[in-house]
Each structure stands twice: as C-alpha cells, then as structure tokens.
Length: 170
Image (tube, rainbow, N blue to C red; front, top):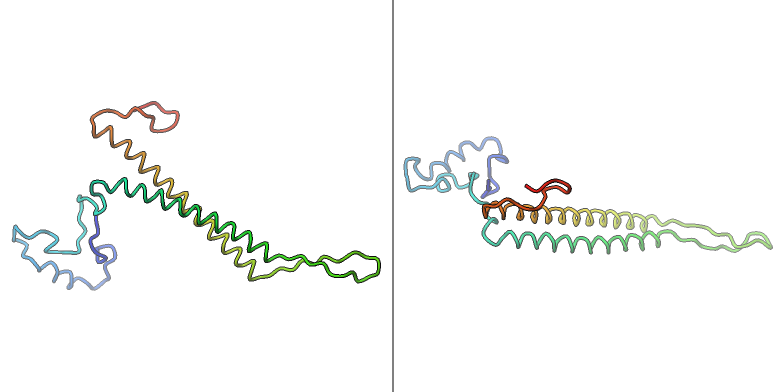
C-alpha cells in the first residue's frame, strides 16, 4: 500500500468530507479513461508497488542500511569516548595542605555538575547511536535473508539452506 500524499484516510482531520467529495468530482465516475488517481489524487493505492521498489533499488537500500549502521557505530564509539572524557573531567581530586603538623596532605574530591551532565548526555547519545547501528545491521540481515528466500522461489527450486539454525532444509 502506498501513500502518495500526507492527506490520507488515516490522518484525515474531521470535517473534511466536503473537501473529499470535491476531489472525487474532478473526473466523472463513469469516465473509463479517468484513473482513480485523477478522481481522488490522494487516495492510497492497494496492490501497487511502492515507489522505492523499482528494479535495482533493493541492493541500494541494503547498502544504505549497512553504511548507516557503520556511521552510527563510529559516531556511537566517538560519543562513548567523549562521555568518558567529560565524566573524568567532572570529577577532580585535589590535595590540600595538611591542617596539623606532621600529617599528610588531605585529598578532597570535587564534582562539577555541568561536566557530569554533559558526560551523561554523551553516554545517552552513544547508547542511542549504538542501538541504531544494531537495528540497522539486523534489518540489513533480514533483507539479505529475505532476498535469499525469494531467489530460489522465483527460480522454481526449493532453497537448500536451513531457515533456522538446527532445522532441516526446506
């Protein structure tokens, strides 16, 4: 199912019936040359191919998923390094001189709220980016498996690989 416009049945605001009726009147219903799109240009079309499902688009989509996951993983790793550096800069231990004669220096730990908050934000960003990378790799693998399953079916033969690890071939 494709959605040619943002104005579709699922997100239609209430009170739009007269506008929809006016769109339907653009071409007479008994006109055999008028397509459904001419009579109702924003109607969803069922059973037609999606706009990006043209020949050759599937390998491009898969390579984009893999590239996007790689970029997200690198950005997540860099954000994790930044989170560690920001957090380490937010916690400082200073040595103050002794209060008593003969005593050693007194260590005092100071915490800086803005640095720690920035470190927590960078850690959150790193987590989200790594999660995005993992999801994209899973989607890429699903596309690859789906392509494997559909290739033997199109050729008329049964696939010779197991669907699930440990199961028998189909």
